[in-house]
Amino acid sequence: NRALTVKKDLAGVRVLITAGATREDIDPVRFITNKSTGKMGYALAQAARDRGAEVTLVSGVSHLKPPHDLEFIPVVSAIDMYHAVLQRFHLTDVVIKAAAVADYRPKSAAEHKIKKGTGELVLEMSRNPDILLELGQKKKAGQILVGFAAESQDLLENAAQKVQKKKLDFLVANDITLPDAGFGTETNIAALVYPDCEPLCLPKMDKIKLAHRILDEVVGIRKSSPI
Ligand code: CTP
Ligand code: CA
Image (cartoon, rainbow, N blue to C red; front, side):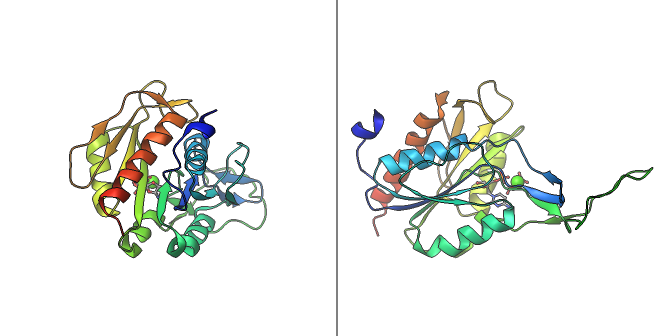
């Protein structure tokens, strides 16, 4: 049992993790979502809890059982997640954004079920707020921000741009075209991408092991910049 053997090196640290997919309604019976299952974010939440952190898990849609001994906040849409995260940010030491957040939502969800016509249906979409970008703008000294990115091309280049733009301490980049990596798998093949040094490509590992590796990185950053 790993919980009994891990070091409590995050004791008292307030860690907010987002996980799962957001879901954007089209009408009362239809929605747009994505392939995130929540496995990586839930593994992070459990690992942080086992290391002594005070964990808040803001979860989009996921079929996983909420882990115990942490604050669990279920949300549905990107806007719900935005409010849940922004409200709590000032009380948080570390934010890890493993959730797959919809970049767009239907401009207005139809009140009634949309009936089919004879031609095409055009759905107008509005931009959702970029939660992590706003956290990067609001972040105070000592707060740590970790992003995730799933890419199907130009992994490291795209990741490096996101690290700079969102003022992240680091980003966990996943190449979803590799086997045994990405959505719904038990394992991941990730690269840690930093603002000021070369990326670190990690070997394939199961998601709980990767979660601990990510938290090791967080502990290292806290040690090197104590506040
Ligand atoms: N993210 C967020 N809010 C959004 C979109 C993304 O907080 N509206 C966060 C994700 O949780 C993730 C990180 O930003 O930690 C990177 O998400 P990603 O979709 O890879 O990046 P985007 O900036 O949305 O760029 P694009 O989808 O165009 O590649
Ligand atoms: Ca996106």
